[in-house]
Amino acid sequence: MKIPGNFVTYSLLILVLSLNACGGLTQSNKPAMKTWWLEPYTDITPVGSAVPDLFLSVSVTVVPGLDTDRILTLSDNAELNQYSAARWAENLPELLASLTSRTLESSGRFQVVSARAANREQSCNLHLDLHEFFADLNPSGQTTGVRLAVNGRYQCGSAEAVSLRVSASIPVQSNRMDVIVAAFQRAMDTVMQEILLEIPAGQQYQDLSDR
Image (cartoon, rainbow, N blue to C red; front, side):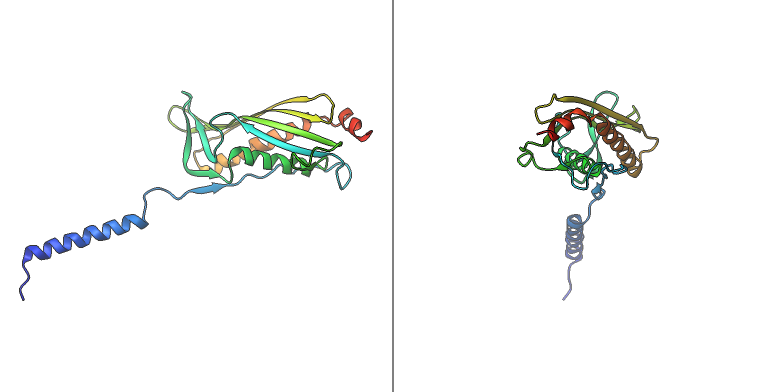
């Protein structure tokens, strides 16, 4: 049986369109999402006993725009954006709380517990408010550095609260994500060191130990 040429052409066209449609379901021009990791600052010589006497709860809030797991950028005209296909392992409030808790435990000065468990006589509270956590871009879209800024409040028992204000700025000479994340790690290490230095280790500890 002779098949008309236009029928064959039409059938081939349908087949090609179908294959392209199926390919679109499994392929994408978008780059794969990559998750990036930050470590707590642990280059600390532990002090005190093996089991710290002070219980510490850590809470974190962020300013609007920072409650995300995306790696954010800020242009010179104040446009907040993000790197495509790049994110942190957790949203920033949870990420900062985890990094801070693990850093303070590594110091040997605290046993980090939940806010409910910290309602004991010998307990301290550290609240952090994250104001900056992004990379700066120049007018041509190149990354020039990363910035972190945190305000906080630290209190042990009924002792007077201590206000914290720490920040870090690290220059970056590349748009490679691994270089940018390494700069965030350096900035986070700097902020954690400053928090450890600003948390008092004198009278407030004595106030609690005397109870």
